[in-house]
Length: 319
Image (tube, rainbow, N blue to C red; front, side):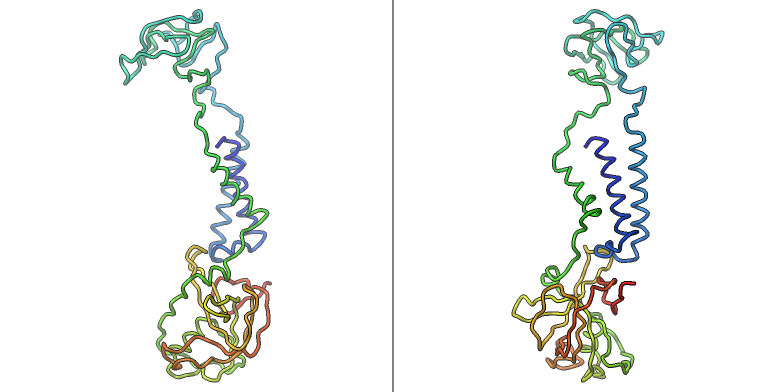
């Protein structure tokens, strides 16, 4: 990839990171909120690197890849013992073998010219430039030394897609498609439960509801009206559906899913965010692993996706 393209890629990526972290909360679709500061720093660094590269674009190192034009040219790579290149010789001249450090005795021949004998200490021998001369530090096609003659695979240009998408079309967040194809997150064992508040309906996270149903020997959840919040995931086995939350440990790559089965109402459209009120659906023995984490739905209404969509916390509303 040419240098201008590299600079553009750095700049776009930096701008994209700043767009998703400083001016919007789009980054929360992909990582936890705690990673916002490192993302902002990364965006600033990439943007500064891109701007610095753009500022120096077009500058060349005067000691590398010097141009040569013809008779009278002094090549910085071919200096005599006095440090000054000799006069150019006519095109097609033929000299002796080329000797370089570490490659003694190797012949070096290029199109239209065989270079005179050199050594690393002062290039002893006939110095040369001129029409038809090809410098051994240049390629046989006459390009200057230091140029990159490798070709970039076309697929490398796909690297621009993520950078551009962060600016104009951010990829969608994980949702029902992912949740339907992932295994539920194992619920950790909890020893001892505090008394439940007297509020009705009682707001609970999906994880807390599941723990109460399957582990609370005191059966505090029995007969209680609770309110759960999540998005709709259709069941893969029947016409039922689950209220779901996807939980990021760090980012979308390590996400896990927690689900509660819903009974008593038809499945709303997938990915719809709902606040659902109801009571535990009796299936299995309450307070043991045989109890199903399920709810008999009394009421369900749609809500906006909360800010903390990829945690299993009580929902936060946009400020």
